[in-house]
Every structure is written in structure tokens, then in C-alpha cells.
Length: 405
Image (tube, rainbow, N blue to C red; front, side, top):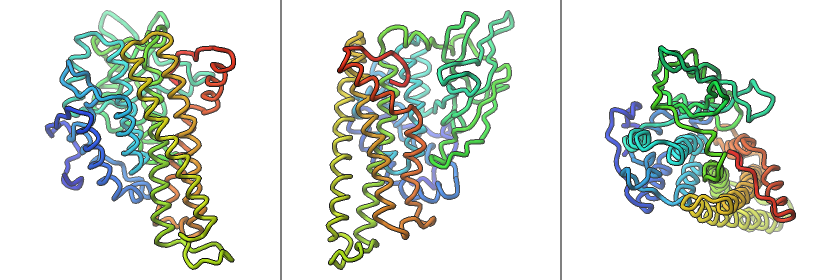
């Protein structure tokens, strides 16, 4: 399937059905090879990836976490992380867009009613994309929400404003966090075409330039009661929602790191010059270069292994979500997230350092790996991962149940 021939409207195409983990990984590999071809150009020109996302929808990849009883593959958490990492390796922006889609499906799995799950999971299997409208700038901290769910005799309505709404620009539905009259938080699965819902393409980050992470305005947007799923309840009891979100973020970072590492190998072999006075004629024989490549490779392999390990802990928590299992998953995922932050920044930096001035040329776009990593690693400050891990090992304190652990 050639991206250039794929129509931008995924709803017009019949999505394939992926049945197994192996099929999901093979599909991600095929798509990543296509996405890699235009990644630098998309980033440089900020060309939004409508065709690439249509290819994702048509491939069936967006339905791989749907439970088997609803017709999905229900892939393992490790497989899902590998899928996200492989896409992020090719294009860090494309790697993040499905993160919110799969996160919304996990909230639906954990808190949705049987009827809500049957209907919305079926949409995912059909290739429909779920975006995100969670974050706000109006509160004193990142956890406060002011967007309201208003219930009247005429119906239910949503009023508010969001930012960093990754994927909303390309979505069929925009899952939106809302607060009801009692101050309880819910997730409203708003149709993208709902009246009063405006997605604004005002994202201007220096990295992840094509994620469509702009603003969403909600001006008395009507919402059907059966499109509103409990959200706050996912953190009032032990559930997998927090570590599930974070393993996808870890996968994005580690995928970007793998992309930077592979680009470094290619650049050094083909174009880089040796260090002055190194005594060698080719950069790939330079002992300092070899040492730096070895350090990146070691840390990258460790991060990838820890990511897969975290997937096992997360699957245990999803199967039996008690306090101990969820805490173990949160700590394992926090470890992967911390290592992923370090290696993504290191690999992106070493690519430029070892490539020298030639690697900074805009037409090559090699700087995008570091820029994508630097922007994405700010999503949830890594210092809190270290705090939670240290507090557990030193004081036997289980980590809090939040979306950032």
C-alpha cells in the first residue's frame, strides 16, 4: 500500500483486521518503512500527515488493543510498545499521535459500560481515530481541569478550552476530559464534527512539529450521555490506566532514540570525517567515535530491554489490577520512561556531534531526532519518575495513582 495513493478520509476505506501480535508488529514495520521516506520533509515543511494517518487507519493498526471478545487482537503491552517505538523511530511526530488513541481505548476498557465498549471499540476496528483534549493552561497546575459538563433538560453540553490536543486535528472523535456539577471528572468521546467543537492548528513547538497538538475550543458542544465514560474513577482504585499511558510515552522516546542511533551509524559510515590527529583515514575507524557509538548502543539496548520488561508488569496489572500489581507496573514503566528520556536525548545529541557541521544541514533534517526527543521528554517531568522509584526502594512507599506514573 503506497501512501501517495491512500485517500485522506479513512472513513471511506475498509480497515483491515489484525488478529495477532505478530501481525501487528509486521504491520508496524511496513508502515514505518513508508513513513521513514518523507519524515525529514514533513518535519521541515510542517506538512501534516493526513495520508500517513489514513494508511494507519486502513491497516487495522488502530484496533490492535481492542479486547478479543469485541473482535480485536488484544495485543500484549510489550507488543504495543514495540509498535509505537517502531513508528516513532521512523517519525517522532507520527509515533505520538496514536498514543492518545490507545490511551482513550484503555480508559474505555477499564471504565466503560458494556454498551459503550461494544460501540466505540467497533469504531476503532473500523479505523476511526480518537484524538485527545485533556490538558489545560488555566489552572495553577497541570492536573487541574475547568472544562465543564453541563446537564440541562435540553441535553448535555461541554464548555471549555484545551491545549496540547495531540491528534485532535486528525481525529474522528476527540475524547475530552470534563468536570460535572459535582466536580467529578469524565471522558467525553465527542464526535469531531460536533457543533461548537473547534480544533485550532496553532501548535508551534520546535519539535514534534506535525503532531497537530494545538488548541480545542468547546462552545456548548452537545454530547450524548452514552458517549460520556467515567475517568476519575480510573485513579480512585488500582487500574492500569496510568502506567498504560506512560509505557506509550516511554516507547516514543526509545523509538526516537533508535531512529537517531540508526541515522548516526549511516552518517558516520557514509559521510563523516575522522577526528583531527586521530591517525585514521575514516571516521568509522576513529577510536573516539567508536567509543561514543558503543556508549549509545549499550544504553539503547538497555532501554529497549527495560521497555519490554515493563510490558510484562503492565500485563500482570491489567489482568489483576490490585494495589501491588499496579504499583509494580508503575515503577517498571517509570524506569523505562527515565531511561528512555536519557537515551533519546543522548542519541539525538551524538548524531549531531559525531556528524559535525555537515549533520546540521537543514535539508538532511537530522536535527529532528533531538528536537522531537527534547519536546516529548517534557511531557511528564522525568524527575518525578526518579522520585517515585527512590521513595519506593528507600521508604517502601507505593507510587501515587496518577496519569504521569
